[in-house]
Image 1: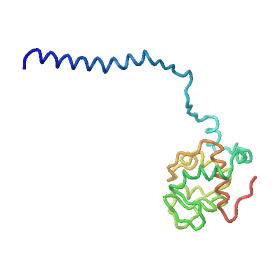
Image 2: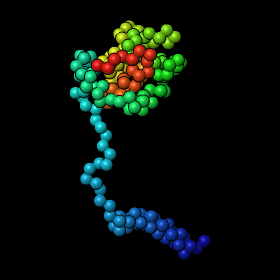
Image 3: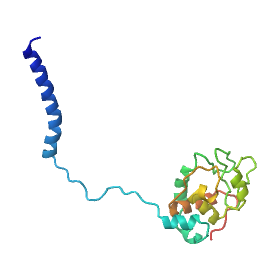
Length: 177
C-alpha cells in the first residue's frame, strides 16, 4: 500500500467526521425551532397544607364537602389502582389485601380468613367515611405498621370517589352525610 492510498483513507475518515458533525450544525441554521416559554406538561405538586391537616388525625375535614367532590363512576376508574391487591365483588377471594366488599361500616381487621398486620388489628376502629379518607390519604402514616404498601391518594376527588364507590359495594351501605 503506498502513501497515496493511506492519504485517501485518512481523508475519507476526516470527511465523514466533518459531514456527521456538520449536518447537525447546518440543520440548526436552516431549521430554527423556538423553545416554548412555559412547559407543555405541568406536574402537580402536593399541597402541604392539605396533607398535614388531614394526616394529623384532627378530623378537620368536612366529609360532606369532600364526598361532594367525587362520583361513583370516577371512583370505579380510580379503584382500578387497587385491584392488583383487593377485590370489591361480593363473595370475592382475598388477594394480597383483604376483600373490600362491605368494608365501610365494618370494624378494621374483621375478616376472619385474612391475616392482618398487628397494627391494623390493634387499630380496631370502624371504617367510617372520615376514617377511610384519612387511611386512603396515606395508609402508612395513618396506621403505623400496616402491611399496606400503597402511597395513598393525594387528590381529594380521587379519595372521595373511591369511598363512594366502595360504599356502593355493600349489602348495607352507609347513608351519605
